[in-house]
Image (cartoon, rainbow, N blue to C red):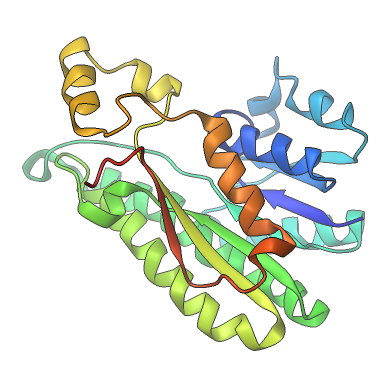
Length: 244
């Protein structure tokens, strides 16, 4: 049975993707920065109830050595790594003039370097298999920029360039690499916005609603499927028409 690895999958979009890929028949390697992220969390049990195998691998994906060790453990546990979803990400928002170097570097490390780390080590496994799917989580902030998110926008824009480079480098080995760029999705993060900000955002969205995590997972499912075997190096915006 094929195996999918999803970083940052204890909750939110990552957990939704993990559950959807489990429904598609993949064994699932869950990841988050620590085992405690999965405390009081039934995502592993929900996945196992779907009839596939699931295991949690705690690692800080911004750390090169931890990624190398985790990929070795996942390969030993499941035998193959067929899908990698680079989902792990954080925000530390602030206007440029007030943003600390620490918060800039942290977001770049977690959001961007993690993609390098995981793609390098997982890509090595996929190259030997001569097959694989890599799907990166970018953002509309990486496509259009966003005030107050210099660090986040930079990290997500970089992921687009990394996606296209990975597609070119690994395509000859039967590996595809694509990115999805979500807009405003109904998550605990957007729930914290003020009513004024929510109204302003909804006014810019053609569909006049926030997206759901399951809608992101559905596009990832397609990119991981045989139906997307000739799709690579692409960035699919999932924003309800925010850009129009």
